[in-house]
Length: 182
Image 1 (cartoon, rainbow, N blue to C red):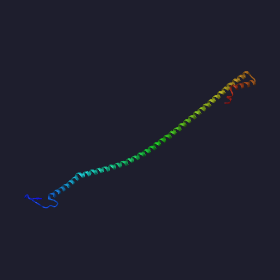
Image 2: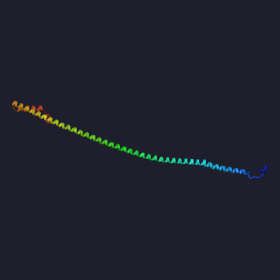
Image 3: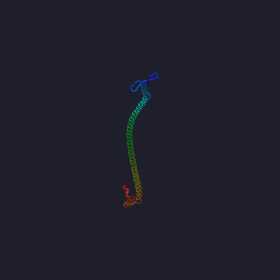
Image 4: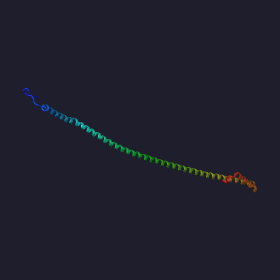
């Protein structure tokens, strides 16, 4: 129904009960919805998208950093394992060198001990030879003294050959058989 200026109502047929006011309100509402959608899109959706994209990039970067860190860690692990192997080889070399030097020192000490033993034995042999010569000299002195005693007895008694043989036998018995054998 349309109201006229005079207060009477005129009847007009409307299509689907649409009047100009309803169409204008609908258009304004539609425009308001689009403006609100674009405003919300600009102020709310775009920042939300930017935030989600930034988060996605951050996560992607962190994953790349984690992959790089993992690769670096694997490289460091390989380097440390190589260093450990080298240290083990070096330690084995040092130990074998120490064993070799200890064996050389042992051989040197044994050789020195053998040389010292040989010197001691040689000194003992020389001392034994000297002692033997000394004893031999003592025996000779004893024989000379016995011979002079015997000569004195022979001269004193002016004895015959039987007495002289008897004195020689007696002197030999006094000196002993071992004196003549050595």
